[in-house]
Image 1 (cartoon, helix red, strand yellow):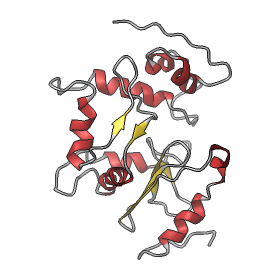
Image 2 (tube, rainbow, N blue to C red):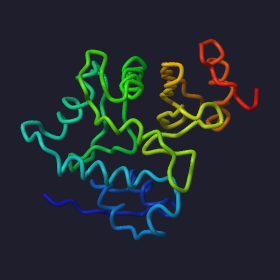
Image 3 (spheres, rainbow, N blue to C red):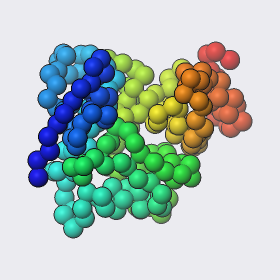
Image 4 (cartoon, rainbow, N blue to C red):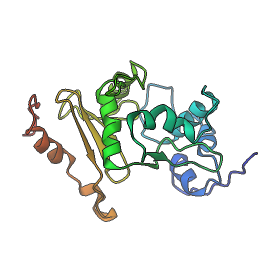
Length: 217
């Protein structure tokens, strides 16, 4: 079945506008956009590339015995006991990998723990490829503050990185301290930019061994 795309984004970038005005297929909308520059020469945060990767991962995957709704649960969430986790889907049955993921704080902590253990769950089962956690947390060629889907915290700890949700629901991963912090506090929209992440994190880290000495303390 084909879906008609109707877009009226105004000044919003396609990766944002398609969430609100696309009938079905954000990946298609974003894939039609021309490149601004040669890959690995310009960094520009956007969710569009993640929408495209989500579609590729579902259309090119193996495991045909599971449908698109079952696949992320069977391959990622259920093996780590994150039974509350859910990624929102569009009408074309493709999930939005760049946003709209939901879980309890405990299950987000499980997600962080999986990355902390380099993709191996606590029972010894490998869930992620052995190179993925290192790749996801490594700095981009043209921007040191971002990895692959994760933000980096080099001003606090060069090994630290985190997944950032809408309005600062974050999962922080600290390999040096063997620590994961899941933060789901959500301030009023007007106060969204006022969250002091630096002081929040550094004050917690001082309670743990091997805490790095932050430059600003």
